[in-house]
Length: 143
Image (cartoon, rainbow, N blue to C red):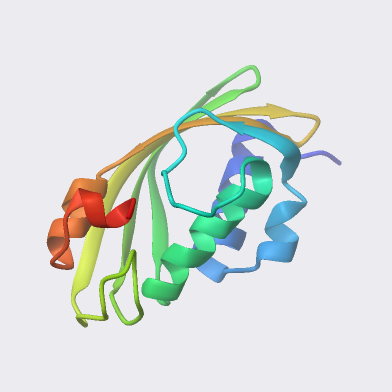
């Protein structure tokens, strides 16, 4: 039985963001996924591979990362989610050495789901807030 679009997004967040189970998470992404607002990290690929790369980089810096869904609504093939990411800066993140600080970042994603896979994503995260929490600047995140 195929998951509804909201279940697909919740499952992807659990696998990728909370567990770091990237092989399983990739099964929920269309390989040609279009990321309309990619975090501009040098050397990161496009599509699903690039999204997984960025999540991996973030989880390296925040190995205890937890994404909590606060609000989620769906209509047809579109899902909008407001989430909170929390974790401890225990590894290098965007060139910033570990600080041991707890972080909290709020974001909103909109994903389009086709045949049980995420095919498009639009997202806004408080990257400036994240960088301020770990002692960096926004320009550090794209250096």
